[in-house]
Length: 327
Ligand code: AMP
Image 1 (cartoon, rainbow, N blue to C red):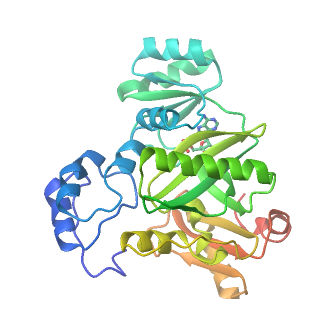
Image 2 (tube, rainbow, N blue to C red):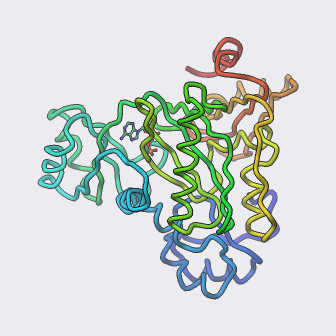
Image 3 (cartoon, protein in one colour):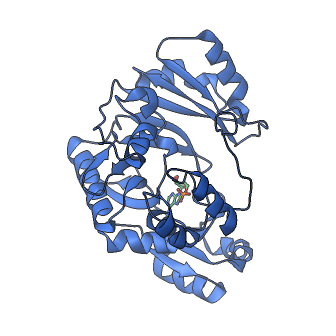
């Protein structure tokens, strides 16, 4: 971001004075990840222009609060329970059963801070995680995962076409739009539930929700009040994109309903695929858009960029492209 911004402040996420200085210097403030504690924003929201408010950030920062909030506002979740020590872990396992996913309540992302418990023998391995508050969730043997990105101006909610997501090691790997395997009925039920949820929570701005799909039903997994990795395909794949609609909301301009330009595939580029992505970029093919983020250090499993293939479906990607990246 330093390459394109005209001002910078470097400080800890929870540094209230630095956040206030950021607000003072900005016409409008938004957030693009979940590590700034939402409650610090409460007094700032009264004094500065933070059009999304603090609530979507605050609600998404703790997996327990996030799931309680999803249920309270009409979304179905997998079974879950708060876990703080061995006794509460055993009680939760008795209720939820194996397999189950144990996750830290805060600061987890991309599969960090998660452990799948397959059976009793895995329990001792879970105990060290309990030094911080955790949540135990039923492991969902989903058919696939899907996500929706929405933007609300407080009255109207627009949403981007729903994608099917493929994760590897807990990290988004591929996104296929439209989500084949999802019939129109399921697609519109999911979109309607997402829009109802946003209205019921009175959220404004952008929100992405990730769902597990199983037997024609969808289950809330998590949400993010920011442009989402699964929405990066919208830059070229849609008539308007998630970043632009967020900015239009922040500036008080009317939102535009997006349309899919053509079937689109998004492939995330992690450190191990950076060289392959650079070769793809050099080929300069029509419909193949390579985005490299310019991060100074490349590591395996670190998101270094993404490639968007416009006019391609999952079958074509599998046949012509999948082999070019690390398996
Ligand atoms: P999360 O950070 O909660 O989105 O987890 C990252 C990925 O791990 C998800 O996108 C799923 O692929 C997998 N995962 C997490 N929780 C569960 C669960 N309860 N059941 C099945 N898979 C899960």
